[in-house]
Length: 344
Image: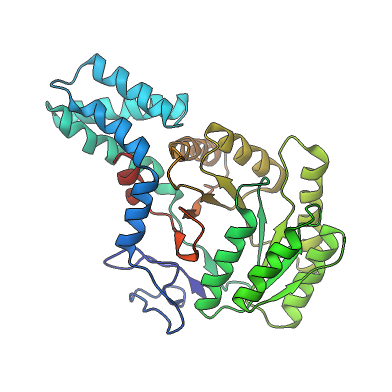
């Protein structure tokens, strides 16, 4: 069973070798992988969220902890796209932490905020496990421009580097260049692809899952058409793809991932809610945290996830975050790392 497990000492990289379920020994990289140090990744993430970190850090340069500090922090968090509810939650929790710890220096409040944010984000931290089913069918959705197909290509590369046999399904038949774009990634990663000229997305998905089972593949990645959640007929098409995939494999899809653009702010939360209602999401990939994204929307998503759990559902984790176009710019999400990067 392939899994991106936590290491005992440091967080795992996507390029870590796969482990059997339950294995606790830290993995070593496979010979054909090109692992980047986690520290390098953290530096890129910090650079990507630098603007937000700087704006929040300036709040703590004053001489006292007072209402003015909290008002400035309220504004900074809202400007970071945390949203009203998440901002209110973080401020209330922070005030309690300041009181409990009897903190008197503004400079010390920043560490308390980082702890509060990390705790809020912690439920979003979860490993993507491959191998409980063969093939593991992963359906990937997202609006046009979010980086969906590119993220699929990067994920394919990392899975392949770790020994998984991957099959791609070009089910984004609405966008003319989508099949060609996915084909480029298939060639680059030397994996097979199932596509049809102008074919029905659901039919392509069915054929891919059937082929994946017949060919002994470990993973089938289904690239669905990009669409806005307001496009009802296209959202219904997504639901149809899911139903047809289940006809090919009653247990599938095993993961339903949504790719969201980190630059879209609170609109990203609206997308998560809409796609979850249509498909029942199991995970997220957050892209483009590379300099202009504010990043605070993850706090809003985490708070929404709490409500989802409270109503009997499950948390929707953030499996991966991306900071650029290179393969190594897609990495596993770690709550503490993200909180530290977001707060500078």
